[in-house]
Length: 193
Image (cartoon, rainbow, N blue to C red; front, side, top):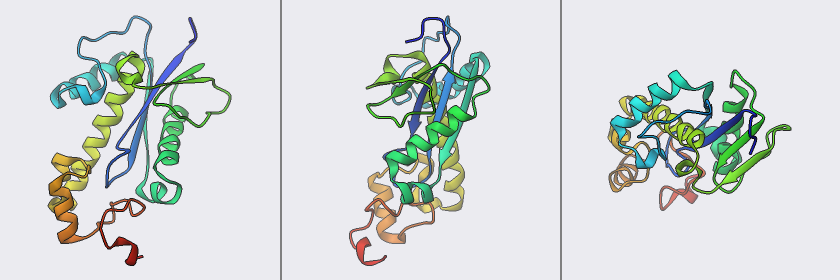
């Protein structure tokens, strides 16, 4: 990795969800950045995620959050849509990184910037962990906003993941405009389209 160059950590949130966009974040941190609670967002308590988000946004050299819509997920597939969201987040950074640290095992090359994929990178690199916190908190906020329009799916608590309550609501109410049609969510779905 670049010793004195600028590296950005990238991560996404919501890839496995039934509903809502996939969000991604890119974060460039100063070399000496640290916070005792910083970790993969899934390992951090929700209330700590919010204070971490504020801390990251205050101390980062640059950060950006972007999304790919449900329509884009359905059109391209979730993996490509995740890469699109990551590229958009990198595009939006106020400072151009010289190297990208990507959480996971696959990535679509971004212009001419070299990258490294790191499996479980959000538990190993501060910049990826920071990106994971931002992507997760922005997405959770958005799903809470969508919950107000469609309360019966309980997105406020499940954030679009396929919990038993969410699956029961799908069986009862069918798909909302925010559900990913390309995901096989209903048993008889193939005959609906």
